[in-house]
Image (cartoon, rainbow, N blue to C red; front, side):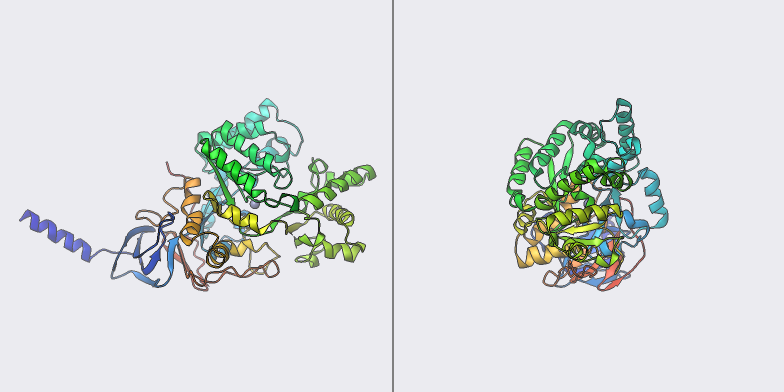
Length: 520
Ligand SMILES: [Zn+2]
């Protein structure tokens, strides 16, 4: 009799199981890199409740995913979320299948992080976000833009800010050693601060000191920091910049493999493009920017002898680094001084203003641009074979380095709209650089594990229901360097914490994102 009662209870439970949403008939890529399988996915209360066959529930919303890939939502470990308060819907990111993104990259972050996270909770945000605490932000807060070592007291204060930030929810520390004031920091300073992040299980994401001629020594520096601070390290937006360094990814990956074989936890992230995007000051010698990127710079540039030294440094960079030895390789994304040049190149501007498009004239024009509060530029100086070589490495994640963007505003790098679909279309389907399960792993479980995120990055029962559904035959990026404001095609649904945000071309601005947490 007792046995009979148990069976009845089970039968009763099965017949009345309630789900909020069921995705039927999809091809499940669980994010682990394993072979896909056919199954239904049921969601309840924002979590993946059941993965199985013939799932049903009276009240559930049904999505038919026949012929489509159902996978974990993409996790972008290098995102420029700075405009999140302006664009809290985060549409440019979510439309490419991203459900979680990490801000505070390249050494720049909110401070204090805890208060900022509170403000996001109050405001309501479209996708899940986490933050790294930025070394440049902390150093600037404590020391300003000075070119010297910190005093003992200053180092203690910086460590304390990192410690507090980690306690308030930061996922780790980021540096931008190419930028001010991080470029003035010695390795020992980064080791000391990374130890604090490591003690709270945080990661260290490194925008390397150099990505051009100094690339190899910069990779070695990051590995040294991993070793001395006992911290997981991500070489972020990994690439080899400038013609003299093309092909150097073979050496950098060998350095990574060698370090990993010694037990150091070195990882990589990458955007799938042959151009970078950053301020024009990246080609200006850092000493000339010390103390103030615009005012102090302009004072120095007014001195003919200093101006000549600055120009020499810029000429060196235009030839060997982000100039690519051709002014046509430097494309303006945003130039407040001459907004009509957005989308055009340094070559165009030099011809119009100075005549001959020589490197020397290009350097003079860079100084004038900086005197007029700078510009953001797209630098077409990465070799396609390096992009593929880095992508194929098993520890490489896909990350956009893209800035949240409002449709039609400015001239962003196309990665802001197309990063993840571009990998799935161009590099998986068309060029077969990596397989589809591997590409999805690089966008989901690998970043989740690298950041030690709690219950995200896999399609597994009990995990948060962040899910992207796409047609593997159709998915592609549409954004180009000429026409960046284009959403990708082939993405059918994006689900965040169990809520349908994208349905084909329709975007529901319902702000169901949350703050990412590390697992305990
Ligand atoms: Zn960045």
